[in-house]
Length: 268
Image 1: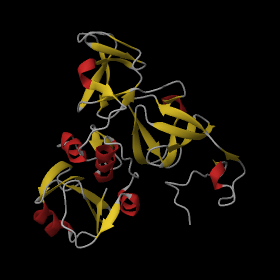
Image 2: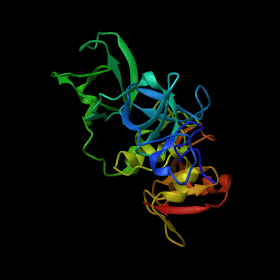
Image 3: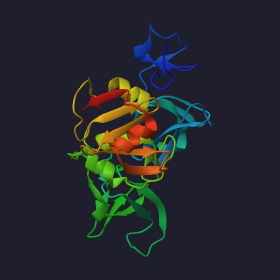
């Protein structure tokens, strides 16, 4: 049985590497495109339910464009779904990322210019030109204080997770506008150059190595059915959760009393 979240095959097309494994009318290598909006929804079917979100600059393999919807797979998480074709670009070459919690995109290189949208931590943009205070991007102008080159990785995923403290919980969320438990893991480790699967059950199968009878260390992952948390220190975890409806640092013992024993302990 294949998992639709990670298997790029629908009723019309499948990835070429699946030939002989999945039956489809057509097989294709696809082509690379980038998310060209601050934040887009990755849906289970065209116009359907949100599975995940994708931030600006995320590289995708596009297998099909049909009636304004692109059938895509994230080149980082492997997640498959549908996005609006108008939200993608084949021309982008992102070279910077948002390094702050988030920032505004301005119409002009001025703090008094109308702000066009908000863009969250980790989103990536091509910088076309810079001045003392602003970087010009295809979406507008962003403050230079809020960007960094995207070829430099962060070192501590827990510090990245901490940047998301109090972000509201959002099922399927992947940004500082709203995030869920697996989204926090993806954001935290992705900023450090380690790209994890999209959902907690997929992360439980693939992120790092499973441990038994091992003392937890900062940055380890705890999994329960349908949930994942990051070990903050020897007494606390940090996680996006529906109990607090936000990203929170929580006493480990308190969390265990509420959620029950950890099913899987992994270390990346």
